[in-house]
Length: 249
Length: 349
Image (tube, rainbow over all chains, first blue to last red; front, side, top):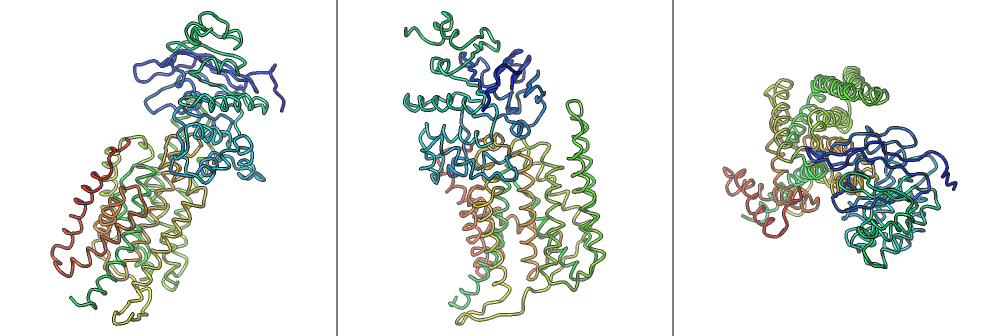
């Protein structure tokens, strides 16, 4: 697929703010990502990272209010319902996965394609694509999603999001609670997605691993972007090293 | 009590239990998908039965007036919400077109059909289908008008709205149908005997219809994408939203199905009982007791609960007929105690 990196961003936020009642979670944030790019947002807990992703998807809880623009391929989608944004090509894997735990892995995946109905496309094709990326899910396809391990659940969540054929995949803490080996596997999949032209917006506690697979990065602190730059440069930035990468070097 | 009476009472209990099972399924469905306790269920029982009775006695089914009226109301609500959103985006023309077809044209079409065909001469199955063509859209419209605008409200607020809708529909039922009840024709005059026990064809039909409806529901939830989408919404609302199953779409589906099940339950009891506009409420409450046995979440447990309610009602009407209802509704106390003792965790809310 063509990674059209020079052209306009596929997703952009302009002055995006989120507030819950009187509490402001995000203040005028502007970020952008292009097709085939992996962009990561790092920052401490409570900096508004999840609010950013939920606002882009239109999935804020009912007491949350977003202001500002969310541009998808140049078009403002900030007043669209989730279903419409999903249909356009946005998909979110939330921090809590939000799987259908009492349903089988395959049903979870099939429902990921709920909005994707086109002539000549069957969800079987989609399933084969997901099983190619996550062979383990094929073995476990008849198992209930709630009985899977943490890593497998994450795979189901990512697979379910991919079933909608997104152009922009947003991952909220994909490595949360995973064993290091499983985490490596998840990051491998994320960097593999780049080759298919999917843009990934990543939020990660594990900033080191995230910056390693990313092209670009933002540092979000108390609702503001305080630093941005190429991922490789951010990883060298002394302030980032001290605050987020730990003094492991 | 000899075995003959015992068996007859059992047959009676299972027949009624089958009807309660349908109602319990509908209540579990609506609650698990929308968190609404569907009190207006009883009105669909009464309205359904009275509409079939009207068709059989060659009267105009006046429920269509209600369909036309609520259709206009629904259209106005949808137009209003579209106009309010105009600040952000152009008027959703296609959506409004559909709204005109569903809420304004369709009821007129039904009105025309009711006038132009001889419904009295039709087979009962066709009369029931036509009744469903009135009540199912009515259920969907009621969801759109009363519940969809406040889908995110708490369970208690939704219950209060539900009580309001129940009373509003009850009043409209009295206005439309009047205070008199009716019965419908029997499904069949056929009867047989199993050993010493007489088996009425009526019971066989009720059990067969209820049983196959439950089977169809199972297939719907297990095999079809829409059925899976409803289950998914019940399991995880946020997850369902993220894959594009809109809360309101799922709610409409649940209400359409529940209205249909309520109507069918009404037509199943109507040949044996005189059904008035307000008869359904007590019947639906028994379905509710059954649904509570299933924790408003489990379909098989709710079905088992329905059989239990049916049998309990049948035997208590033999031994203590004055206390029949008391005994059935008292069942809810041990059931609640049992449920709160066995399930350790609190409700997710």
